[in-house]
Length: 155
Image (cartoon, rainbow, N blue to C red; front, side):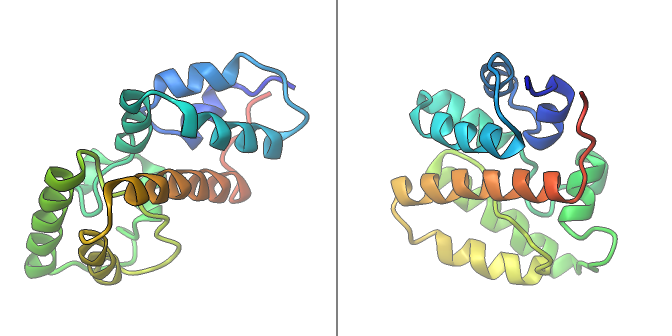
């Protein structure tokens, strides 16, 4: 099977070069697509790795600036955020991006934004290569979760 571009775009938001690379080959199934994607992501030039990571919205971004999928994943529909927590997230995101040169991406997996803020703060002490590897891992955890939840798989 050749994965549909629309499905890949839903799994990997705003990463057109990565989607293009994955869309050009034949695979046995979606698990093989994602396995190949993980292998590919680790060998991409730095700018393409950052595009893949930065395609995800900031944690705590304005609700109007995120996709419907990210809106649900980040808990905008169930998690109340105080002005204080929003300010903390904004500051931590800015610090993280200045330190590492890419956005903080995490597989939220039902955690509140307050929990995620604590995690984001702890990650600021990690080495850049470890944090880049963790972010790429989480990009694929998000993609696998989206696929398992039934993101439209176009034929």
